[in-house]
Image (cartoon, rainbow, N blue to C red; front, side, top):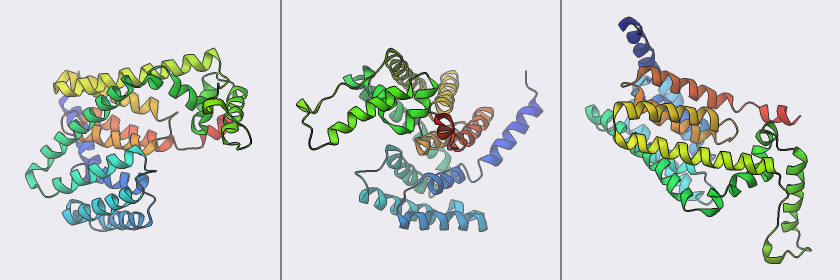
Length: 291
């Protein structure tokens, strides 16, 4: 059993990491994984500079409102190409903006929205996937492993030969050739038993872990929450190594940290470690593997 002194030390470290009632991590999310829009970059970097020079700015409703407005305009302008996590980022910026005006009620508001957000993300995604034959059949992951360059290194690591991916990509490029007629615009891509197996494992892992996390958080009980956070941390550590959607991973870290900072200090520290891992996953290991 850990000593009371040890638990107090962990809580103290976690509180330090959660400077500004969990807001500093959101600001880093905005700067590192925000929009490429020039106006948004300028505003977010000026906000970070201002907070580093004058820490009380972190709680300024005006600062968060400006960033939320600029982010919303950037999303409207680039809605057709924006990643899913950019929509989540805008939502969370507005949550933080409102929370910064609530005073003593800010923590309760953030906690409610963090839980709602995670339940909505995971159960909503699982429901959508369940009714998608293309997803549940494993087709989506198999196509990604064969054609998406971002997954090529991971596919190679799990035994999908590079020659198979290259052959599939060559076949796929024929769809872009205006001189070649393809019946029904449909092609049978070369694949192997290994690519099929890996795709099915990835599909069911992704689906089941999302259902489990969402269902546990809906219960809002201590044991269920601990199980949910353990699964969420496992999901973050394992998913964002092969899947380079780092902004989404960092968003999940912030939501998990928000829920655990005061209630489960040790778990909150693990979320901090997960945030570092997501950053390290951006190292060019994929190029090293393929080389």
